[in-house]
View 1 (cartoon, rainbow, N blue to C red):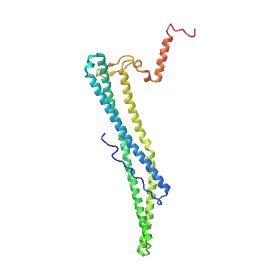
View 2 (tube, rainbow, N blue to C red):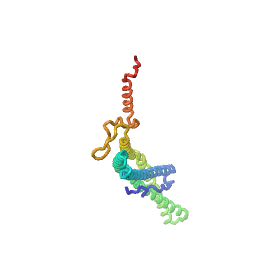
View 3 (tube, rainbow, N blue to C red):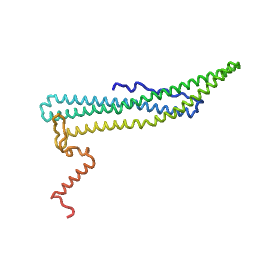
View 4 (tube, rainbow, N blue to C red):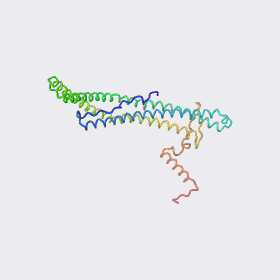
Length: 283
């Protein structure tokens, strides 16, 4: 994760206006297309930067929590109180499991988010190369137009000058046609790349969301086990906390699926109605 997404930006220079080689509307079309692609490249770089910062924050938080639980475990206060020692040991076990989940989150995010976006960012190099070639055509056309203008302003009617002027005019026409062809290619191909950006980024974002869901879901489950409202969690042979057999009684109602929560409520009502002290409304 040493790659710096801010190291290289490809789309930096807006296309030079080429009117009258192309129409003013065509100039505006190319400029708008460039600014849209420039925005996509900037967004791509920002996404990578912020994800890198987020993953570093997750890693640092997990390290800090492991250090905290380790320090608590070694404190004299915990050794003097058995209940507190048990709580701290369980907390340290949860922190260790969370740390493993964080390592998996970092690995998955690197492969399914950062690497695909880095590859996507590299595609802008090819777009920039095409635009640079187009810019060279525009500059060459402008240079020829300047030479034609100077020859016409001289008013020299010498045969050599006339031949030279005619040749430059032909070069000017050819340069304008090259610009028009290049412009047509760009405005046909670049929008395809622009319109496909969502198709490319959507699976990447979905993978990130699933990784987040898995990480935070496991974190919630670990802490739910740590602070049960029903049966107490116990330690397995490997030292990790394991859930008690009846998880429905220990999990907070807010964490249960709606259907399961309603089933528990209906079961409670049925138990109440079955009591002999509850008068049957049908009697």
